[in-house]
Length: 130
Length: 113
Image (tube, rainbow over all chains, first blue to last red; front, side, top):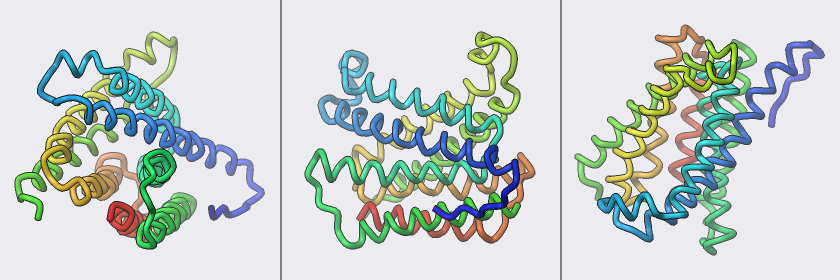
């Protein structure tokens, strides 16, 4: 990731919310994985099944941890910088699907991962310049 | 192909979700004092509620339409959040951020292929 070393004391404060959001996307991706798993097991129109499904509840729990991390990060960081970082979650999800569900990532998929990282670097640069 | 009303639902869902992010931010900014005070911040809960509504709306197209096309549409929210950051929070929107968002959205569509 691109980081411009300024030697300034502000740098540490600048990176802290970004790191928090990166961690949150990891939790959110696992959360989404379990929510999806839960939804595949049941019909979304059955409330009883919704409330009693372990995968679904665990998924929302992980999502909740992610949300707490995001709110903590947002106390100081800028929304226009932090929100696009959530796209990292798409990368985790793709890697999760590849490792656990045996889905094969195509060349286009890998290019997509590279573009997301590049885009995040751009947004981060925009945050430093603005 | 994906039906227009499923796409429309995703537009609505991502807008609602973007407002969720906005209220997360507004609430997070004013968090101080005791843990109870932090946990009962109305704006954060409103943000969460909006996020929940957005997720509920988007579940329907994802379940009943082509998820490979619907899923990356959630990235529309990056555009809405950028607009709301500028208009509501007075954050600056420079060319790096705009370029970054466009590249990220392209990446998400490639990743979902």
